Image (cartoon, rainbow, N blue to C red; front, side, top):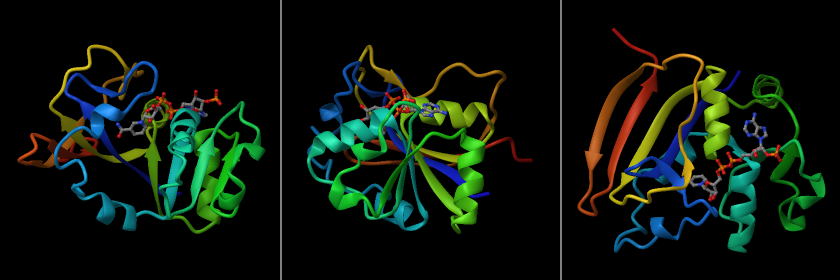
Length: 180
Ligand SMILES: NC(=O)c1ccc[n+]([C@@H]2O[C@H](COP(=O)([O-])OP(=O)(O)OC[C@H]3O[C@@H](n4cnc5c(N)ncnc54)[C@H](OP(=O)(O)O)[C@@H]3O)[C@@H](O)[C@H]2O)c1
């Protein structure tokens, strides 16, 4: 099965979006255009698995931002919700995470980028996330869509490295599971 990897930005109080899904607070920083390792991370994956919430936000951008294949997990969306010009690169599927990964293995995927708060939480609960790169933005939102949520048991992490940037962004890389 492909391994699953998270690369995400969160407010210091742990939100990935405001309650209404707004992410403008992510883009208000003077050097928000800096890459922060995103391009290298994207090159390292075969494609993305995103939740419906993330898909609907990306559609609202008007410009499709991804070059890699994208799988949208949804139990409710019509497959026709895909922009016609992206139909070859995007598919909407209604599968449990494990079943999806088996299908992607058959497609030749080795590494998947999992994105969207509720989706990441679901993959974490299923023990399917290999590592997490989280960039903390120096802002407190007070409320919003959380990156992490309830778990059946503690999830130990191994800290690999942390890089702080002049912008105040602090990026940490964790492998899921305790090493050593
Ligand atoms: N800060 C960042 O770096 C960052 C990154 C990504 C996204 N975002 C923002 O976060 C927001 C979206 O995150 P979100 O947490 O609201 O939604 P999400 O995780 O993107 O999507 C959740 C939806 O995915 C569907 N789904 C299908 N299978 C699922 C499963 N096994 N587990 C969980 N969900 C499953 C469900 O939709 P159905 O009801 O259709 O089944 C569910 O409501 C957007 O505003 C986006 O812009 C921010």
